[in-house]
Structures are given as C-alpha cells and as structure tokens.
Image (cartoon, rainbow, N blue to C red; front, side, top):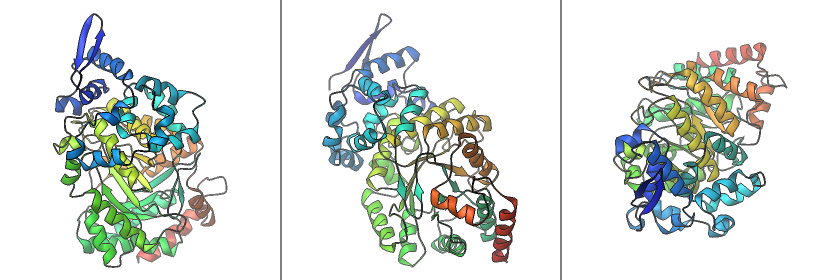
Length: 462
C-alpha cells in the first residue's frame, strides 16, 4: 500500500497505511495509547487529520482495514454494502463528506437513504475530523425508528431502560427496582436485567417475573434478560417468554469469538426470537451492547484504533435489525477512556457513527469509580446526548448499579432530561402512563397514580 504523507509546520509525517492514518487522527484517548497506535503528540494528530480529510471515501471499499479473507465482519460490511445508496457521496473525500453532512440542505430523508451506503470505516473516518458540535448536529438530523411493543426513536422522544439489577437476582429486589422505574415513567425502551448468574433456570425465572408484571398491568414495553445468547436460545426452546434477545458484540471476528459468538449464531438467535411472534407493532427483536476498547481488551483489534473497531460493531448490529443498540461508553474503565472528557467525546462519536449507519443508538452514560470522572460529567453528557437525538438512556436506581459496580444514570436523570429538553417517552408508553394515572396528559408525574400502582405491585409481591 502507498504510504500517506502530510507536511505540517515544516515537518513531514508519514502514515504507512490507512489504519495507521485513522489511528493517528483519533482524538486523544488512553486505550489507543495503551495499544501503541495513538499519535505521539497533538501536532502529529492534526497532521493525520489533515491528511485523512483528503482521502476519498471510495478508498475504504478498496483497502479493508482487516483482511477480507480473515474476518467475517469485514466480509459482512463489504458484501452488504449498497453502492446505489452510496452513489450521492461516492466522489467525495472524507473532508468534503463532513461538509456535505453539515450542509443545511442535507436533511433526515437524505441521511436515511444514505445509511446503507456508508460503511463503518467511513463513519469513523469522518467523525475524526469533526468537532463535538458537528457530531451533535449531524446525529440530530439522523432518523432511526424501530418497533416491538412500542415505537422507539420518533422525533421529540426519549426512551429509557429500567436496569433493575440485583447481586443475587432476588425477585423482590428486582421487582422493587422495576416499580421504582415505572413510578418515574421509565421503562419504555426495555426492562433489561443483567443476571448475576448465567444459569438457565435463574434466567428463566427473571424472564417470567418481568413478563408477569408486564402482562398484569398491560405495559406496552419489552423485556430482556441479558444472559449469553446461547442461554437465551435455550430459554426460547424451553418455552420462556423472551421478548428481545441480547448480546454484547464487537467489531472483529476475533473479538466476537472471545464473546463466544459468531454471525451465524446471532442469526440463529434472531430467527428463534422471531418465531415467537411476541411483538405487537413491529419485529425488531435484537438488543446489542458495545463499548470502545472491547476488541483491544481481547487482543483482537488488528492494530486498529478503538473507535474504528467500535464503529465496525455497528455494521454487525445494523445487519440484524435490532430494536436497541447501547454504547456502554465508560464501562470498561480508564485504561480505555481515561476521564470525563474522553468519555464524553467517545459517546458523541458512538452516537454519530451509529445513527449515520442507521442503528438505533442509545447510550449508557457511565463511568467506573477509578476513572477521572464524576456525576457532573455524566450530567453534561446527558444534555449533549439529548440534544443529539439519542433514542434512550439508562435508568438505574440511584444511578449506582449494585450488581455491576459502576456509576450510571438514574430514573430521576431520565425525567430531568425529558423535562428540560421537552422530550417525551414512546407514544404507546406515554398513553399507558396516562391511563394508569402515573402521569397527567401533559406528562407530569402524579402522586395518586404512583400510590395506586405501588399498592398493586406490593400486593403482587406478597
């Protein structure tokens, strides 16, 4: 391959190949430094960004970053690429693509039609030459709508996941957390439990618990127990009430192998979930989670920077038409995203790349206790995500996950963001909140409705 060269400040920089150029152009983050692929200093980073801006988008179709013969994710990305959808921007460079995306004439309809023609590497590349403001502006224009028992991603809407984790999977503790979330008007994206054990029996018990609550109160929402995909397939075979099939995924075949999955296994899981026919308004049955650094932590990144690997995971996600995709942005730790600034930047990159590719992106605005971040950073990120059109965020009791031991966002944070930015939950769920008296027609929570539901659920637990 021909090296890429750029002169800046009287100094000549050489980047041996496209993946090196992408890595050096990436805004600073600890994971790339750990991997030894980051720019040596700010000047080299700027030189790489200038050079990258002149690379034609078509180059990413001609120079796979991970060899086609060695990686099924690469094959999926290239074999499913829609050249007709790509045509409007096929002659552009990365820099010109940035200007095209930001143009006022490039609207939601245009971006929706473009999505199948953009590869993850193209999205990652253009994000590296954009400011945070640019990422927000384009993300906001993207439209991605999905459906199962309600409709997620409509303009002016912000959904939420209830995450009622418990360190021993105690049913009463899980149910209490679900009740807490419902009383705050949360849960329309998914009631999603991370089980403390991958035991099929324990997983099925949790599935049955959530489904009993959902059916009894006719909640137009969906549930998921975030066990390994093979456990969920087994649960489906045993007649469990599975709504969304969950799996963590990554951007290389080797990284997915470290998760114990393959593309064929994900296809098997999707077909199993579809066979149940549990959706009422749509059939988006998958739920994926990712995070920058997962491929590096598995030593499966092929020399790529972590953000480009992350974007490739969205190529996998897009193929399986999920209801939800969640970037768990600060979960892996400061080895990959060191502080609040890096976490915020990564979240906006992930949201931009996912939405540009047509993926229904939500975000777990989170951090570990040994990161240089705090809840004020998450408050800032929440507002940025809301402005950028993030489709859902997390609701964790007290913003402190007592099972996974990390800091996230609370039910109150969901209400804060909806109230402050004038956003509303999914329409079917909003109607349910009004019918139950939990919220009035304007969306404000009511004390009487909360008392009624609390009394009913407490009686159910007894």
